Image (cartoon, rainbow, N blue to C red; front, side, top):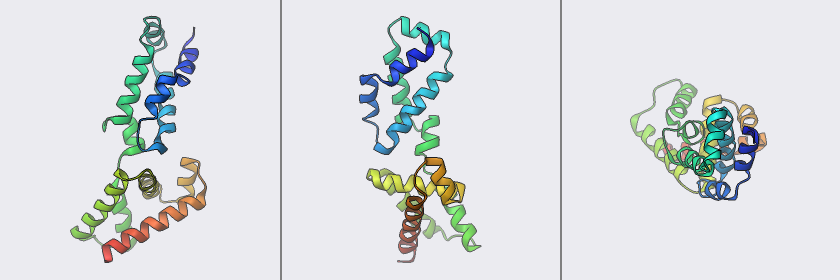
Length: 169
């Protein structure tokens, strides 16, 4: 059995899919599955075959998933879950041309963090807004996540309104 067959079997394995189904928010589960495939494709094929022959391949893949899905030090965390609040504040600062009072930063940081840890919908909005802050373009965010640009526009508009309301209110 070659490495691609091993990876395909893991990708379609019920135990693997059940574990991925436990990762929150739900919107990240497909991304986690894709990242697992990438990690396994980049892994040394000889070692992967050895682990498979020894019968430990499912446990090996499950450990990778659990680490990626729960660790705040994994590349998956940095790519999909990390709350890049500093970038959001840099963006806001660049828009108004002056420094932001500390109280304003605290309010915005609190809102963004609570949304990221909130419901899946709130986390989704926070992730999209953070990517918008990073890329500075709704169209680029839509391309990055392969979602409709109208959705990105509405989420960004909503998040800006929420932040402004909280800061001014």
